[in-house]
Length: 289
Length: 156
Image (cartoon, rainbow over the protein chains, first blue to last red):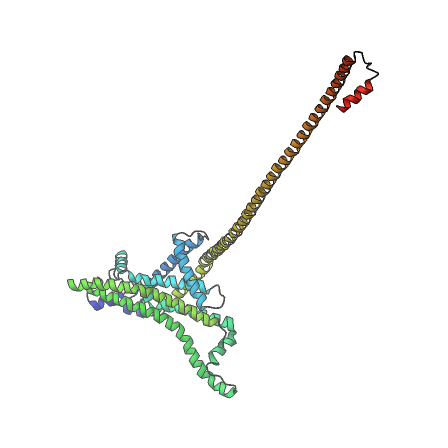
């Protein structure tokens, strides 16, 4: 075990493997939390990126395999699974998105599958992957977090990408003027120009908060749920390290129960992220103001 | 838990995956799905069409069967009628033939009777002549008394 005390153990589990500029000027992995913090913005969480990219590649490869062999005849096992997912996403998109877009549906599928896979790593017992990383690297103190969605960078990265798409489509559909008008001329409007001029800052304040709330809520909801879930797993894992037989036994039961409950959460959070993306982009496409 | 450039990396990866999915995953799968949907719709259409055709064919078969039955009974009726007719005709013919044969036979009998009568008459005439000869004791000139004899024969 990386740390002897429970708090050390928990802290170790919440530390990312960070690659960035070391205090001596060279580039390398941070050796402590303080060092990682000192690296500033231009540092990378190698574990987060590695796992998310690996799972993303897994997703595209598996789906590409199914798509290449896709037949309108009798589908095989893999094609069946892929088709169920594609149809599920397609239905969700058609239910809430009324425009026509070649991007939304594949985007939604990617989000759902990718977030689901990243979340699903949470079901692997918390010590397994860090232990493997420690054995492979030879450094027993190496921090390693396998669940990318418990890293706010990952969820923020995706939420900001979605936010960029929201802005892009808002401007594309409504034009710059329409987009600015949407931000400033609602919800309060007046025929009187002077009154309108006074109302513009008020409107902007309200609409801007609404706009910013979208990516923030997307990112923090997923991050919060997964982080809390992982923390519970870590706390349960602390029970195993207690050395008491009954506490370890209780830990086994709790680990199992929480994992079962977590299956619901990882799927639900992936679904919510996808659904909200569809809804936000649908709102960006609607020219109702 | 620091916010750092991981965020940018994650965004880049996100866009690459979305792009890949959009280009290489979504279109073939959705195309296959739509094609299968179309196939199933076509199949169902064909099935309902076939069912309608079957119904029509069954109707037609029933109608033809009824027609055939009617025709058959008509033919049987005609045949019976014809048979009756033939029997009737044959009976008539036989009756006519029988009448004819009877009439012929009657005529022949009549003729026979007449010829026998004639012969008898002639014989009676000659007997009478020869009787008279015997009675008179003299010969009666056949030629001279032919008229008389004939008159006698006619009277018999």
